[in-house]
Image (tube, rainbow, N blue to C red; front, side, top):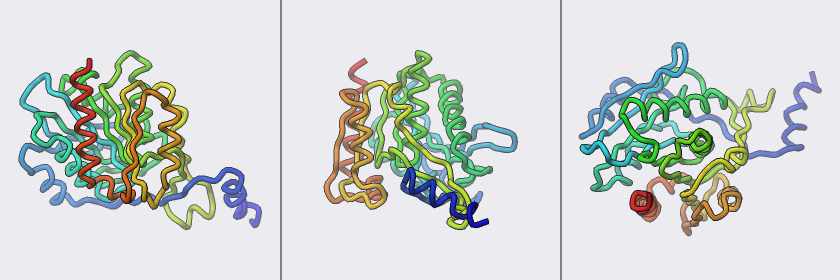
Length: 269
């Protein structure tokens, strides 16, 4: 018994990772409906597994050739509301399509978060969005925050490998590696899922924007710097002074920089 209880401690000492508990909580049907009722927005869902439909929000553009921006949220108890607000800020006055989906076990989506399932879901989100909305891969820009960067890098890299290069990737408060657990109690008994982004980065094409808050209290700057260094000339790296982890999502400078990056990617085929 002592050996079983000690095993997670020994494993973590041998290979340390920042550790976090999932911040998922239910979103009421009424609250979800209110988000979907905002001007221009609609509710949408994607079936990814038996009894698992990921709920999301979508804002379709007027033009068929308009760019789209897909957001992969972080470990956020309000993924849809957070994503909707960020996407609206990025869009500003542009006629851009917008989409965000809550992960399994988050907001109004059923199921439980688990690394490999989330990665598989992310692939399906992109595939179904492209098919349903008749979007070319070159029209789709991916923006991700924190935990979502792992999923976004996986998706963008996989798409590139099969010749479906997406338009751009933006990583906010990037996560190079971390451990996610369901609860603090369970973390005493077993190691959680380890999320390491490095295996995906060799397949991620340019252009990539990596933005880090210099006052990031969750990861500091080292993880973002390491990711940018691994991407090399494919990425542009920025640190914003005085900006914390979650505060990056509401930072006007960051939002403007993302918008400008997408505008530049649109101008350069």
